[in-house]
Length: 213
Image (cartoon, rainbow, N blue to C red; front, side, top):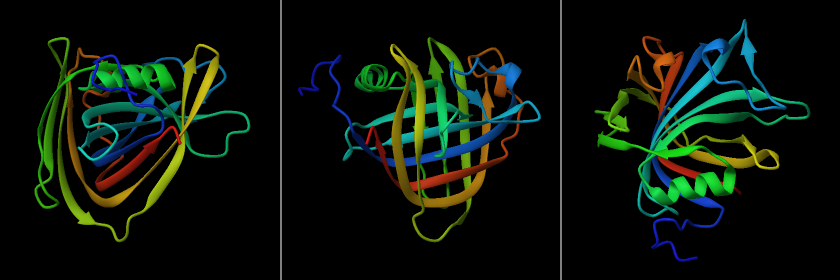
């Protein structure tokens, strides 16, 4: 497939390489969009487990782009593997928008990213604007590298034109613990995270992620 045209996108699966910062949050379900029909958020005392993933995918993979994704852990009948549904996601690559929407029903939209990458000692800083408005910024300060290159796999489940669409994904990389300082615009699309503190945050270096496998 020719991916030179802005509307063209690579066929599945996508294999991406880069780095990421992942934070987990406890958020009341009343502050979140309704779960897709046929699914329910995984909750504890009416709080859902929400993940924010700030990723920088580098040349060498299927596509190179920046991304901020918000996913909520879900449960459903007969579902054993970890699973989540993407509620909001921004990228800065039009082909990623088109592919995410058409291949996997992921609601990607374009955003403007500013990123100051660092190393394992200095961490990184990033900022996202969309439609001329501030959305979020993050500073990740690493503390300790964990041994090995752990892997994880699961499903992203999205409401599609023919019902729920399940997409398998997998990732591995070098994990570092750290502190992520997030700032979400109070009146922005992620305002429900404004003023909250994540349960934990991790950095992933040498990330190798596969989607639609």
